[in-house]
Image (cartoon, rainbow, N blue to C red; front, side, top):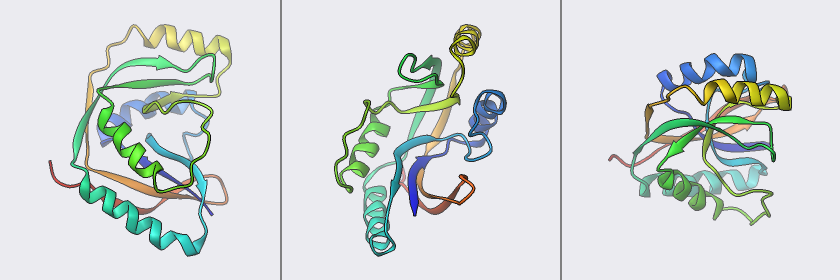
Length: 170
């Protein structure tokens, strides 16, 4: 079965991001707005229990924190993806790194950049048009990160929460 690990921002941030994702993200109906901590991976049933226990340990050691989304950025030319960038991303990178240590190392095609996707799989012209208009807009959004989720992928491609892991109090 395929799994992934992600953070969902608070509802007001999700609502704003979804107002763009409805139009610009073909994955809009498959998963709510999220910050990916671990990309899609395969996990056998016999390893699931240990993985859950290890994720629980990480959650108990990490304190809740706030993140601020401060501008629109993109991954072009690597990918035609537009996203909300995160100011002071260190706690998310630390959480990502701890989670990655639980798994066999895999050569990633790119460096980990925590972000909140607004649009993806766009044509180059659409990417430049949307980015051009959104970069003029000020984004001052803050969200509390006090949990992360182990997700599993359903047959239709959508993602569902398998288990939620609460971070230690601030």
